Amino acid sequence: MYTQAMDTAARDGHASVSALAPTAREQRFEARIAAGEYVEPKDWMPDHYRRTLVRQISQHAHSEIVGMLPEGNWITRAPTLKRKAILLAKVQDEGGHGLYLYAAAETLGTSRDEMIEALHDGHAKYSSIFNYPTLTWADVGVIGWLVDGAAIMNQIPLCRCSYGPYARAMIRVCREESFHQRQGFDALYAMMTQGTRAQRDMVQDAVNRWWWPSLMMFGPPDGESTHSEQSMRWGIKRIGNDELRQKFIDAAVELAKVLGVDLPDPQLKWSPERGHHDHGPIDWDEFWRVVGGDGPCNRDRLAARVRAREEGAWVREAAMAHARKRAARDTAAQALAA
Ligand code: BYC
Image (cartoon, rainbow, N blue to C red; front, top):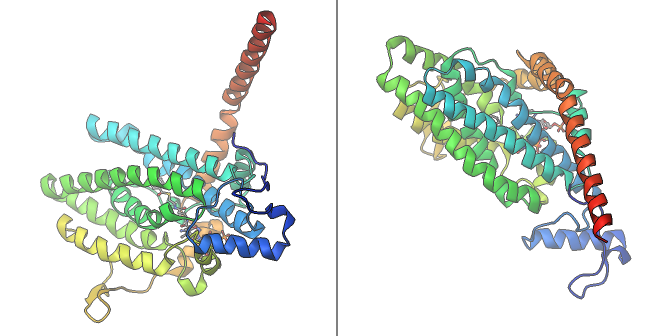
């Protein structure tokens, strides 16, 4: 795995950062952020910056892994072989995203075991959106269109996050999310343009159920966001929760017209003064309930992850035993050759 040691040696002819007073180090760190430089794992960083990143990146990783569950529910029941192959590939991509992100978080001095333990004992969060059930095949399309669409809107600015390993992971993740979003839209478009009345109703019903939870993915309003101000100052977040949510709404309205579905908000209308769509109130009580563990599927999602960890223990043990055997063989071969 990545080294977790902090290298404070002098670089580029500058004095060693460890020789400087903490405030001078902090000032130098802030200046690097202001100059748009990336922070790398071996660079000095304030402890709060490190903890903020571990929190956000690990929660993001958990979201990708828990996010495999609602769609995974439909792999065995996809309507055609083509859709099944696409869904399998998509769910596998989400697993890959989780792994890049755990690896990025490990560069900050935490371990995958610690992160997973924090998820399983309820300390770490994952995206609220994955606590809703996937009741019909249309839900899979709507997750691609709205959930992956919201994820892309949120994640494109993270490609410019000040922490290098996270920013680089996000570039690849965003490319794949873009494919995910289009596959969802394509599945819905097929149902809306070639489907039966019942299939079109099924799509509308799924849109009705996922629209508001998708808006909640961007987090609480800026005024209630605990971390936004500091995260924006450090270049971890580049755009606030409300602005991203608004961008998402504006884009979704146009795509809903192409699909021929209604968005379930009677107050949704274009405001020429603002140059954006106004929208109705979001139920933040529901959001906090779900984030607090009391959504429709929270208990099932966590139980599924805990079970997977327990049932996979023998695979991890076997891999470790194999690695030990291989290392012993290599050492013996080297001793023989010497
Ligand atoms: N759900 O101060 P705030 C995907 C928490 S997966 C749950 O604004 P921040 C996909 C927040 O953690 C994509 N909790 O926080 C996968 C904080 O609590 P703590 C998931 C939420 O971090 C499979 C508190 O509320 N994307 O695309 O500045 C299939 C106050 O919030 C949520 C990411 O993880 C929420 N929705 O901003 C398909 C993106 N929102 O930690 C698709 C990376 C807020 O103090 N993360 N909270 O206990 C971010 O960009 C930011 O962390 C957020 C929140 C915008 C989400």
